[in-house]
Image 1 (cartoon, rainbow, N blue to C red):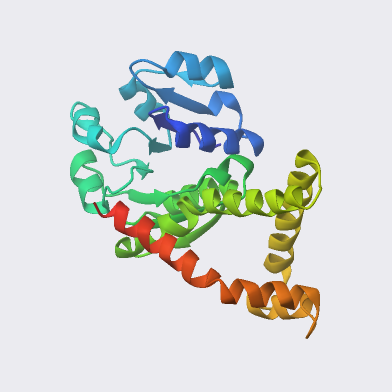
Image 2: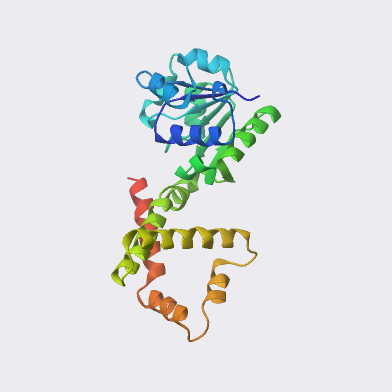
Length: 255
């Protein structure tokens, strides 16, 4: 049985804990430490609040989930004993993590919020892990959804698409719903229709051997109403608008 230890109680820590509990990881196998909010989080989820060093000693995998600028202060007095350390700290490299924790067993990750429902996608870059720690990380990440190996130089791009992407998908759903409202649908109904349409379409694509472009063409008959809408997307520079937003996201992350 794998024991999970969280240093930090932020939104991503809570999303990951929720995902683990959804996969029937016993709450007693999840520990958390934080100077101010560990007890509150432990009470909320039924998990175990522990002092930081005790948490490390008792865990098979330690997830760093605090503010990135706190790395040196948080780790300074701790002995990680060369245990598996998984970081969700934005912008903190594998080299920086290794230096701060004094462990050779490090994985830098970037999950997105959908890990809470076990449908996330997590980028990762790692040191050379032992076979046991590699198994632990694969088990951990599989509970949360999909994982993809990404070069650290591409983390900002991944973050723009997968990390910020959910907000942009919500924006698209809202725009679909608002278009329905403008054409006479009741708002709640319009949102339900738009949400289910996006959910089903994403599932269809994930199960298909066809590309997203090919699936567009299966829905849009030549000269039909769907093709008219796609043609209008093209005229309104829809693809360029998305690219522009992604590039703006990436540029901001480099500030």
